[in-house]
Amino acid sequence: MPLHVRKLSSRIGARIEGVDLGAVPDPDTVAALRAALNAHKALVLSDVDLDDAGQERVAAWFGELTTAHPNVPAAEGTANVLAVDSETSKANEWHSDVTFVVNPPQLTTLRSIVTTPYGGETLVADAGGAYRDLPASLRALADSLRAVHTNQFDYARPAAATARQREHDQVFVATPYEAEHPVVRVHPLTGERGLFIGGFAKRIVGLSAGDSADLLRLFQSYVTRPENVLRWSWSPNQLLVFDNRITQHYAVDNYDDHPRRLNRVTVAGEVPVGVDGRPSVQLVGDASHYTTVLEVAA
Picture 1 (cartoon, one colour):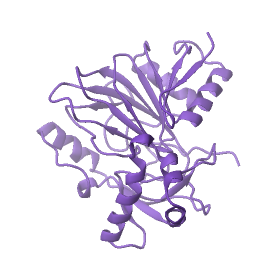
Picture 2 (spheres, helix red, strand yellow):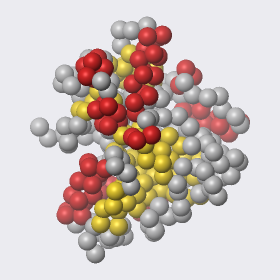
Picture 3 (cartoon, one colour):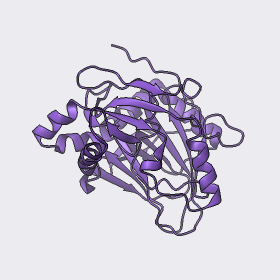
Picture 4 (cartoon, helix red, strand yellow):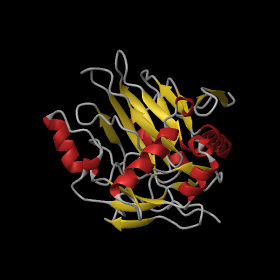
């Protein structure tokens, strides 16, 4: 059965059909999936028959895997699976994954394990469309800026509501990390420019805390415009794949106390590069135990 791609919105998202995730992947299928990801930034596959090992195997079609997280332990019996569980964390803020390390994941996969009777959607935003929406003067300003990202999120994250969530947050910040990234990242495969900010971005280099917050809020408001956002409502046995280089995502906390769990596997990425060709740098922490650095062909 040939791979079928059906757009979910004009700017972001596509449903993929015709891929046998249990088969040994052929190069043409993997290339077609990568092309669809480059074009649509987020892909949804339904009725997937995968366990944790299967999700790891499919994610590895796109490259070498990271471990689960720099600080948070992997799900039991795995090395690469992070349990995104409502009992320990409700990540109701916009972010790209693990941008506090010098080479964040290039790609994230989320698999539905426990879904909610209502709510619990995952929003995925097109940071490339956001950049194109900026007025020319703001694009030029963004091109020139760099931001420090950190996992020490007390400046931005809501306070944990339960003892298990507080414990999770303490583990999340136990080893501090800071990385300096360009505010505008150039995608290494497509050349597309996108705003590379989100919830882990703490301040803009060379600016005061107040000016940093004002500019980050301004740029972020373009990322989260409704026309840039895919709102995905989960069903059992679905796999969501998104390009972490040029998207942000948000888990909506609108399902009361119902349990919700997604399992996450991420793929190692390269060091981001800005419009001026300057790469990101690690300021605090060593994440080499978490991820290798993807080498991108010139």
